Image (cartoon, rainbow, N blue to C red; front, side, top):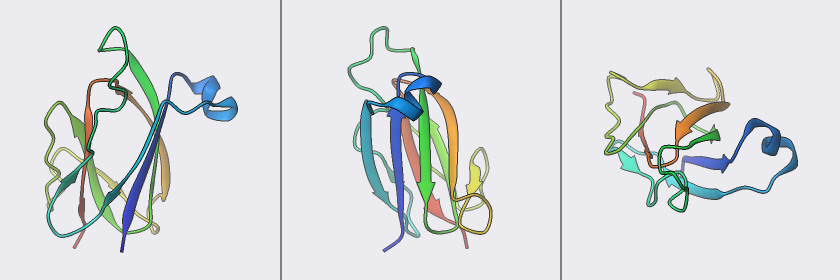
Length: 104
């Protein structure tokens, strides 16, 4: 089973020192799957940005937003995968969700 794991931190400095604010795993498949919670549902104010580490073990398209649906053609998404970049860091608003779909 292919997965995307994300870990949200308050800032870049906490990536090295922790603690993580939110961690979760999303299954990567032929149908888009979305994170069960926002990046940091307890953030105040809600638009505060988080440094998010995203790790994948399969070729996929990743998209985030208030109601994202990753598309198989990659429109609006970021290409990730073991052959591209298995781990990336992004600054994502705290109230957004992550969506992922496999790349065919």
